[in-house]
Length: 627
Figure 1 (tube, one colour):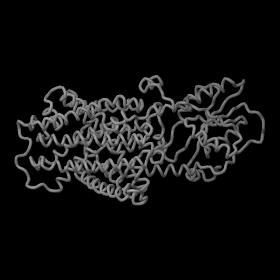
Figure 2: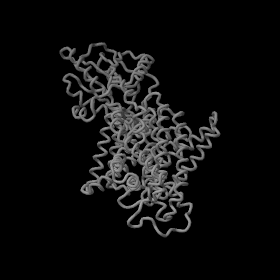
Figure 3: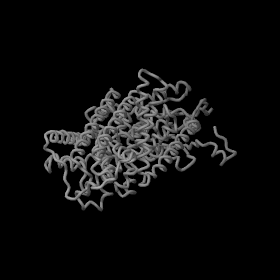
Figure 4: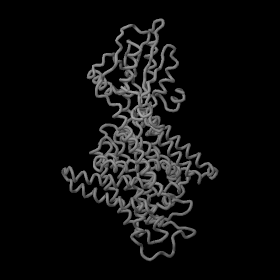
């Protein structure tokens, strides 16, 4: 099993190598940009899909106003998120803002919205790429789900190998796509200036000859909200600040500004080309494909754009693989999701978060049969909810702290909150009947689950807390043939129960802690001295994330020193949960330890049950007393 793991994931990394896994400016940009640039490439098409069926040729008259409005809102968001990076250096973005300034409920709304949006980014991006691939190769049409799942597994494996390795693999295609888009815009605008670029002509009319008289505000707002898809992905940088090399905040802000500049150039440039080329969406040919054909013909650059447009749709999912695990890590520390999400894997990535994305997005792809049009209605709603609450949270912050320039800053954030709120409502209402209603159910359910998890962890923390340390000791001093090793992580009630049991069977006892975090080991030593615990504390420092091998090596050494008739008992505690689903919220380390240590001939694994829900146990056994 370990051989397969090493083959798939590579050599494990030491804890002190985490600084080498941080994203540099060079490779951080494409990792954070893949979702945004893939969205902006199709934003103009989303606008045209709304306007042309009703407005016809008049649609091109209104595109500049819509484009400028979107770009102004984008600038506001970039400025706002740069301020969030300044004030919230530990990541979390909109969640951190809402938690501090708007309270628990708002923070849970943001968290659920971002989780949904990140998951949908993966499902939609992969399904869109598969659709493009099956269009080029019709034989794959019946295998779209399988192809999509293979793509998800591939991206998952690359990310499990570490952030740096993922950035090296996925960064180059993103850069090629960005530069190919820049070339399209520069060459296209040059040809427009020199008069050598002609409007696109169609063999059959795709722009209605008759149009509805007058364009209503509702239609323009719908087009505006559809074009706002160009902004999805902009929030990922503020969520992932700790993933960047030091100085992390400075690098994150620089990448945010560069990303904003790229979006403005690509979206503005493609809008100019679309207006002058009079390009319209048509079956089998995207707006981007038609613009590339008009500018480059069917030459080398045309195929480069087509190929890397398909690739960027896959890579757009990679932004979620960086943003969501970091968010889940923060939520785990706050007690809103299972604590397992706060642990790093052997390659120092948040592997549980990465696997969570893989599983949930795969289930969505299977449930919706990898049909993009069925998944799209669920997409982008969540991100605008987070935009709105982030803007409003910063607005409230400036009104409270009133630092230099607070009036100017609060005005920007207040206006941004109002606009993104309007966009959120329009996006939700226009997509409601097409499937967005599912979000009205899914997000509250997700919020309730997070609230329940937080309540559970708070309850368990109270049950485990130890205010006084009064262990039981045997009075007899007779030597025992059993040596006891108590596995300890914290000094709490489960540890006290382990110590009391060990004292009842042996007078040769040590406490063992396998240390992955030196700071935690220092805190444990301080607690040990504070409670004046009279048994020896042994701390084994491990350079890797694995605790089983260091423990195994220690036991082999102790076992080799045993005399005839002596044995070792390793004592650990297992939580006895009140409900079957509570098991998901606790690490299953005890199970793996028991299974692994069974190969030791003279070592017994003693698992003590700890009933953290004492009220339930007391009801079941009213005459029983617990210390």
